Image 1: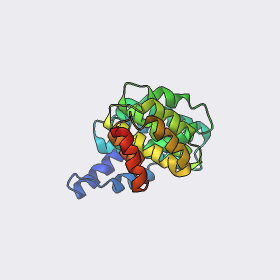
Image 2: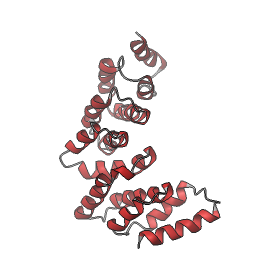
Image 3: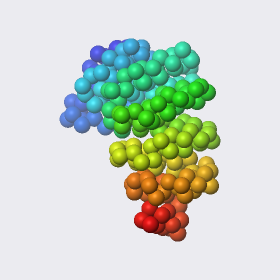
Length: 216
C-alpha cells in the first residue's frame, strides 16, 4: 500500500461527493490502509491537501489503536507524528490522532515530551500536549492533564484555550475535587472561553460561582 494508491482512491471518492468528502469516508479508507508503511504515511502527510493529510493522520491513529501493532512500530508511528508536526497544523488533525499516537505511546514512558510541546511557540503542538493526555484520563491518570493545563492556563490561542478547558473538564469527571481545586486557583486568570468549557458539566450554582471569580 502506498500514498499514491490512497490518493487515487480518495480522488475517486471525491468525484462521488463533488469534492466534499465526508470524514467518515476518509476514516474508513484510512482503516483499510492501516498496513501502509509509516514512510508512505509521512509522504501522504506532506501533501498540500487537507483530506490527504487527514487520511495520513487517521492511518497513524488506526495503527496506534491496533493491538497487533508492535512496540517498535508504535515508536515509528509516534516519531512520524512528532517529527512531522508542522504538517499537523489544524485542530482536527491533532484531535484525530494525538490521544493514541502520542498519549498511548507515552503512557508507560517519560512524559516530558508533552511538557516540552506545551511550551512550544506552535499552537498545534501545545494542543497536542493537552489532547494527548486524554489517553491517560481514560486510565484514571489525571495528574499530567492538570500539570500541562497549568502551563497553558493563560494561553492566547483559542484552539489551545478550548482544548485546555475541555480536557480539564474530562479529567474532572474522574476527580471533581481536583478540578475544583484547579479552578479555585486559576479561574480568575484563565481566558473566559477556557473557563466556560471547564465548568460546562457543573450545576448552575457552581458555574455561577466560578464565573463570579472570573468577573471579580
